[in-house]
Length: 430
Image (cartoon, rainbow, N blue to C red; front, side, top):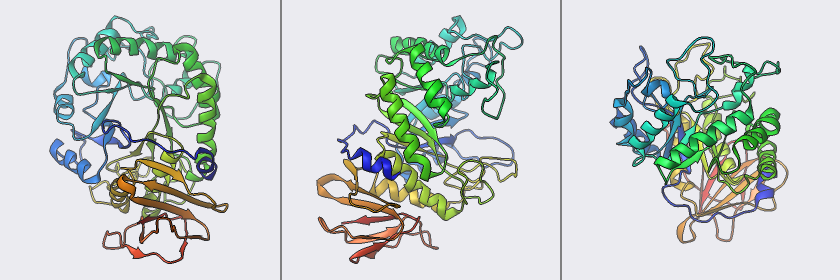
C-alpha cells in the first residue's frame, strides 16, 4: 500500500452526505434459512446505525435481482423489497439481474436455446417495472455483478476462474464487449425512467490480469465510457499486495477513458477463522480481521476510492466447506467480534473526513495516513514496522489500538515522542 500512499498525495473535498463512503456488503434481511440467525428489518436497521455505516449493498432476500422479484413471467413479488427499501436506514445500492452471470435471460426460461445476450422484451419490462417502483428511494443501480465470471462459458478459454458454472452455455460464449453493450442498453432504460439515477458498473471480481487487461478494456469498448457513472471492483487478496494492484487499476482506467469516474471498492474483507486461507493466503484471527477493517478500508480511501464496503455483516455458518465462514463483523450466532468494534471506531473517528493524505517521510514497511475532520480536528492511522515520530503540528494527544481490549473497548493512552508500530494499526487523535 505504501506505493499508493506515496503516489497519491491528494486531498479530497467534502462529499455530499448522500454519497456512500463506508458501507457493508451482504446484509441479511428476511433471512429464513433453518438453523441460521434471523433478525427483523427493524433490528438489522438498528444495528447498521450503531455501526455507523452509511450504505449497504447486496441486502439479501430483499434486493431487486430478477429471480427474487419476478420468478415467473408477470408474477411480481415486492413485499420484502418494499419493507427494506422504503424503510432503509442507510443508502441502498441495488443489484439488477443477478449476483453472477447476469444476462437478459428471464429466470423462468431454461434449457437449450434459452440464453439471451441482449435486452429483450422481458428484460426491458423487468427493468422498467423495478425502476419506476423504486426511483424515489433508490439512486444507485448496479447492473449485474462480477460479469467477468462469464469467462467460464468461453469455449476458447480454458483458464476461466473456478467456482459455480454458468446456468447457460451461450453459443460462442458471452464476452466482455457484449457485457458492455448489455450494461449500456440497460443503463439507457434506467435513465429514461429515473433521470437522477447513478449507474454502477458490475463489480469486477478482483484485479487479476484477465480483469484488467481483457475484461475491463473489452467492457468499455462494447458499452462506451458513458454507460456507467461509477467504477466498481472487489479485492480480497492480502492487503500487502493491494498497492500494486490498485495502481495498475488506475493506469487501466486512464487508458480506457474512465479515470474521471468515482471508484468504489464494494467488496473487501477477511475472515476471523484461522482455518480459512483460500483468499488472502495469510493467517486469519479475530485481531487480524479487526486490523483489516482499518488496513483495507483506509487503504482503499488513501488509494482514491470514494467508497469502501466491508464484506459482510453477519458471518455465514461455521461449516467446513463454507468458504465464507468468519467474514462477518458478527459471528454466525450474532455475537459481536473485535472487527465490529473496530468498524464503529473507524466510522466515528475516520469516515467523516474532509481530507485524507499519506504521512510523508516514513521508512519502507511503514504506513501512515493523516485525516482531517471538521474545524481542524485531526486523526492519524499508523501501522508497520519500527517506530515513527509522533505528530507535532498539531500534536497528537492520545492513541489506541484499533483492536479492542478484552472488555471490548478501545483504551486511549497518552502519546510519547515516538510510536511503536506493528501489523495492528493504531489510531491517534489531537
